[in-house]
Amino acid sequence: MTPYARRGVHGQTVEALARRILGGEIPEGATLDLVALQSELDVSLTALRESLKVLAAKGMVDARQKRGTFVRARADWNLLDADVLRWQFEGGPTTGAERSLLRNLAEVRAIIEPAAVRLAAERRTEADLLSLETAVAAMGREEADPGHAVDADLAFHRALLTATHNELLERMEMVIESGLAHRDRIVHSSPHSEDPVPAHRAVLDAVRDRDPQAAETAMRALLDQAGRDLARLDSPEDGTEDSSEDGTGTGTGTDDTKGSGGR
Image 1 (cartoon, rainbow, N blue to C red):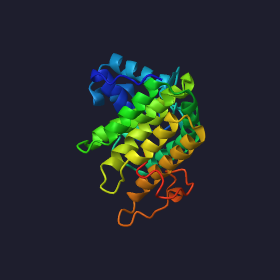
Image 2: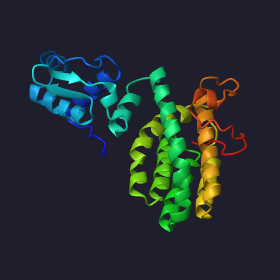
Image 3: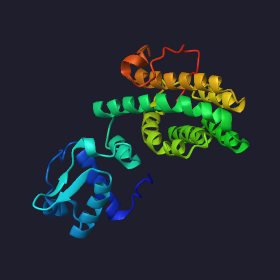
Image 4: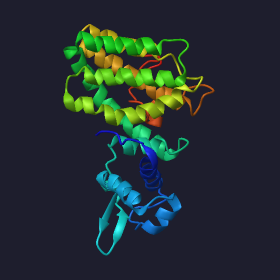
């Protein structure tokens, strides 16, 4: 799942059409008026058709004789495609639909990452440890801005999946990263988020020690804290909202002293 390259008029047209479909402005089942879209988007008919081919490859549109080009049912969309995820998150301010998608992704992470980190603890190399250590060190830089913190967090979780030395798990980075990046941008820009370093350091230490059980426990604590961080944005005054109600964490009730600031 290689991300679609956002280049020039073609890339802008693909993204404009995708966001309209994902946002419901062009509903499921609707037949597209290509002439009207061509005029509205100020592109050639050839460019428009080429853009629709990209969306067709992602299951979002199709073309049939006598019907024309139409939006397919959401059940047909490739929702695990990295671009489809990114387009949903980058469409504007966080909405209820985006929070629902974040909850879904949090559940996916809760299934994948604890199991993946066990493999990482068993299979990691010195190169893997260096990548993880570099990411944690980058998180701890006091001068780091929110964008830098997001990049460091993504690098850490990418390195963990790489350390499994399982090609299919490594590809899951494409699924997890879009949602994680969006969640991180929200959390890291908030003054109510906690220090992300201790939770990530706990995971790194367990992986270094080749201790799968400790690595899984540390990862679950990190994911619980990630859910609490996001839930805290809805009630920043006291930060007491439980992540199991919000659905953005694993809901295991991990004590706040574990994995503080986990992402």
